[in-house]
Structures are given as C-alpha cells and as structure tokens.
Image (cartoon, rainbow, N blue to C red; front, top):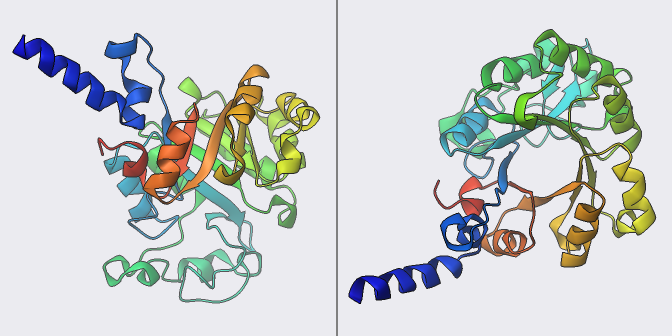
Length: 274
C-alpha cells in the first residue's frame, strides 16, 4: 500500500509540472515532443550567435540552435543578429558595409563577460560544418531585403553539403520576410519553412491559410499566442513555435499551450533535465 501511495503521489507531482505533462507518456499513453530551440544559441549563458553559445546549446541538449544569417560587404555569409555590429562587438558599422576581414577582427564575446573575450563572428559555413548532425539548425534570414540573392547563397551552401533534403527536419528556415520565404521554399522544397511574426494581423483565418500554402511552421511572438490560435494553426496542417522565452513564466505559459517548439535563450527553462 505504501508503494502504491508513493506512485500516486509521484504521478500527482509530475502532472503539476507543465514540462512533465507534455512528456508523461507512461502516465497518459501519449508522448508529445516539444522541441527546444536555443535562440542565437544558449544566449542566456554565452554571447549570442557565437561558437560559445552554440556549444553551450549542444551541451544543454537543445534540439536546435537558431542562427541569424547576414552577408558581409564582400559576400561572405556571417552569423549575427543586428544589422550593425555595435551592440554585440567592439566595433561599429553596418554588417553589409564591412568586409569579412573587418568583421572577423571584432571581439564578439567580451560584452557578455571577460571569459568570452576573443569570440568571433562565425560564418554560415562554419556553423553548418561544425553542428550539422549534432543538433538541428534553424536558419533565420535576417533582413534579406538588404542582401539581394542571399537566398540562393544559403541554398547553395546547403546543397553542397546535401542538407537540402534534411533527415528528421533537422534543418529549417525562418524569416519575417514572407517573399524571401516563398523564394526559399521554391529553392529548397524539402526544407521546412517557418513564418515569423509579432503581428496579430497575421493571425486571421485568411492570413494563416496564405501561410499554410508554403510554410510548415507559424512562429508568433508569445504575447499573441492563444489556445485558439494554436488550434487554428494545427487545423491548417502547420506546426507552431513561439519566441522568445526569457523567463520561467513565459516557458510555463507556452508549455501549457500545446506548442510544437519553443524558442528560448535558456534551454533549461523549457527542458529542466538540462
């Protein structure tokens, strides 16, 4: 009787935790995987969009790293979020106006802590070669309107590595630029496409139907996520992922929303096993 009582108490405790509710296969008979996407790497713990942050995400057993792709003045695909280098490096200027040599000379780590001094802006090629096969990669085309032809360049790098036909959807592409995503869908028809938005205007029935014509995921900011929205997205055959989790409260909210993936600076907020 004591053993039975303990099992009942354990079940109760597990089901009170939203993460474990999602994963309690032995209790409910249903296994629903929620993918953890490390936003710019595990950027809560290491400088965003650097090898240190991506390595940390692998260490924390995230399912994906999310990377931001832009292009240097001389055509090199690089990983950085802002259109300028001002916030996350010791330099100044627009990414598009700096050569790769200039970008590579910058310190992209010290702003986060002296222990990260010397971290560099990575290249897209470096990230693909270092991480494919180890962790999923969610590629964000950052301001592609500034970089004509960047879609073809990204597609070529994936094709050269035979990553244009990803296994288990471990290579995906997202952007706020819907025209760019349509182009990527044509260039890489087997790579999942994800629509990013922070606008409620994009949650109407017609807008969602339009996205479903070419996108596999609908990725809204968590502030506009509702149970009804999640259900409507799923009804159209798309998955839903939301961003950016930077608190335990936002993680718990999304874990209760039947999400397919959660984009977070802190992978352990989504998956406490980390």
